[in-house]
Image 1 (cartoon, rainbow, N blue to C red):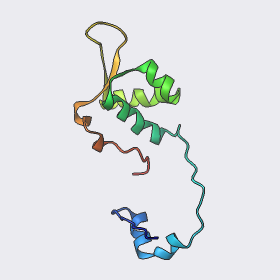
Image 2: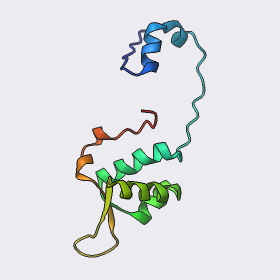
Image 3: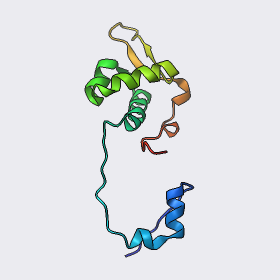
Length: 111
């Protein structure tokens, strides 16, 4: 079989380009990811608000109570804001116009 590795400018990619044996001959490690890690949650909350404005209660229901602190920080920095629906109802969290494209948001948490 053939594999193609597309390297970017990150130090890890560059290391593996210069030392391919360390990638190809090493044992496969079991990844460990904490989905409630604030670094990951921040990007996911921003993405959710870009996709569709959502109520804060819905965000906490989907992303857990750790989302409260992150939402407060995102509001404080102006990356999201609360808007009221025209027909009334609970305020919705909406992404800043400067984040209208998802390419501006990293979901990796390590960038």
